Length: 186
Image (cartoon, rainbow, N blue to C red; front, side, top):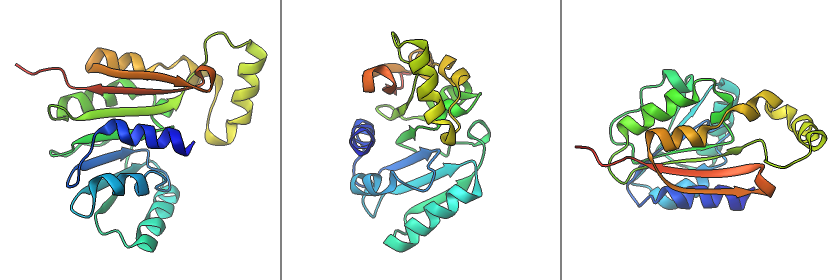
């Protein structure tokens, strides 16, 4: 999975000094890759739903001595994305939110020109036999994956609210990477 996370972080197009929101940051698995991009003058905002996940992210941040990481506990759709965020990353988290479309619309409103939303997540693969789809969902149940989540299609919301920059599938269509940036504002 590391190479897919790296591809997602690369797709953000961040530079030293950038500010990035890691939506559904969990224990901070993306933070080392994000730190490489934003550097010590940049800023990482890690947002997650649970204090347990944020505690893991806090420990990682303290252990590595990063002072440019802010951790926030919030529902995705209830969080007011601050001004100055240059990119938003979400890995294996956005599909879990029933309000994913609203979240993507909110991101589209605040991203600056050339800012990017990058989603790396699971999807129901086209063409897989139903027993295989059910087995894959069963294997991923510890991560809150259910069959009904396969009906959610955040990449379509990206195309609705942002200009699509890139869409790729991995693992025979079970994982996708969707990249969008704001349309020109008048």
